[in-house]
Image 1 (tube, helix red, strand yellow):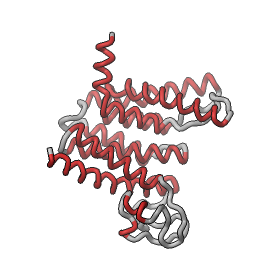
Image 2 (spheres, helix red, strand yellow):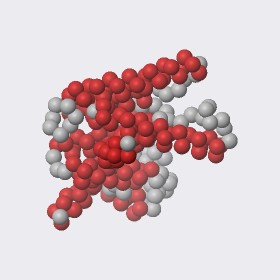
Image 3 (tube, one colour):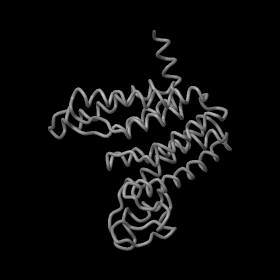
Image 4 (tube, helix red, strand yellow):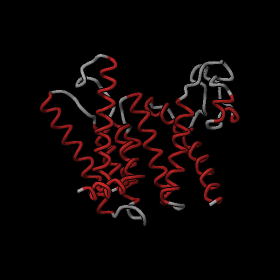
Length: 258
């Protein structure tokens, strides 16, 4: 048990480091900037961030949430993304154990984190995340421990097709744009990675939490609920994570209630 805890701590640290990279991707990818060069810089003064000021989570508190060079405040989002990614990596380890299965699902969770914060900021889900993710999910189905290739392909087609039909019908009936194609591709990616069996839980939780959040924000701002824009990608990501960690238990509980 002690070894498992030690491995968990190591995986959390690796996940936090990947969370630091996720912050770079979240910031630069929507702007069309390189995610490799230049190195990390202060968004206010442009000063390069030295390695000892770029330690995930820890540096934020050591620096008291301010740039060492110019004193500009550092957003709490940076350690939040790092801690969230580290926690997801550790949770995947506890859920599925040590192996390539863990590595692939951890990277899948990393992609969901990136998609979530980009969609919150820009109302877009980059194809550079979702399209390679679809291919990776379908390829992973050839490995042990993942949904069968047929389940992955059905999940890909059913996930993307389901949202596409809703999007098409909404625009025809309401004469207004609803979800974007980014959401369609994201659900296709989720279906490719987790199989069609993940779609009911993912869509259900995304719909419930997205509706609740949309209503709450609309009421808080005093705007009509139907016209209040809210990104759906973060809630699809949440639904996918819920299925990944609790999906089978939820399905078995529901079947047992019938």
